[in-house]
Length: 186
Image (cartoon, rainbow, N blue to C red; front, side, top):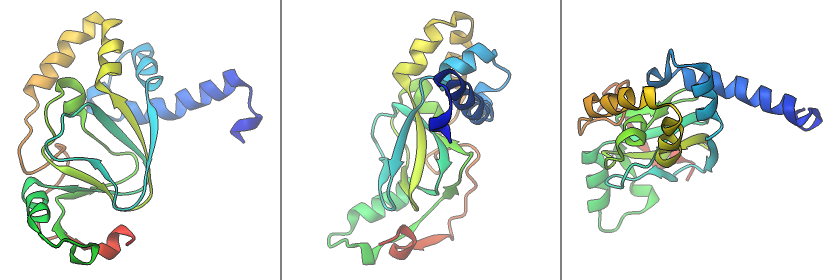
């Protein structure tokens, strides 16, 4: 269907669809439509298979992600360390604590896009996933064009707490939830 549209109509449709996705993030709510458009134009599609690590514990956080399709698991520090400590780890041994699962329309990594701080959890694809990423560099480039928002975003990044037990503020703690390797399509 998209192939039959003119390039300008296709661009308008893409902007309309993804603008709504971006505006759902509290960080971007009530911002000027042109600012949101600038952010949307920076989004890059990334595809992950079940079991792929999207975000690795301890790495510098240089992207935030918007889930277009699929399901991801947020794995805490403790669960990630338990997984890493297994000497003879195989897919059949996978039985980890998952803090939360995130679904289409949700996001993660917004603090990293503002601060670049290290990740406090793993995020793993449970199903095939289509995610849109927004890099820290692209976000800073957009903010260069919107100096009146730069201070606000800087303050948000400094004020946002990042406890070790979860990756995103809306993640509810359900430490009893576990997944076996079958949940990751092995």
